[in-house]
Image 1 (cartoon, rainbow, N blue to C red):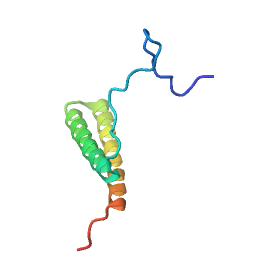
Image 2 (cartoon, rainbow, N blue to C red):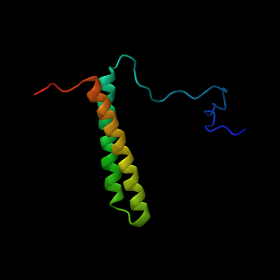
Image 3 (tube, rainbow, N blue to C red):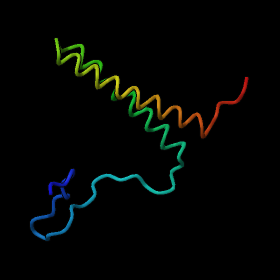
Length: 90
């Protein structure tokens, strides 16, 4: 049977799983995590759009499709953020 995702690589010298290079520290609020997520997605969207406009044809369309998926992810994260920290009524 073929697994959908492979096992992580092991260090060839110690036969241990690899050391974690990046992690998110404990104790950060959900709101702060979502704010950072939306900012990261907005940056990825801007970079992808800039890159897309340097391409032609189907490659441009593919890059713009990726940008659209990133934007959908940002909108979803914004919606969750609004649900946990609604804006005050005006």
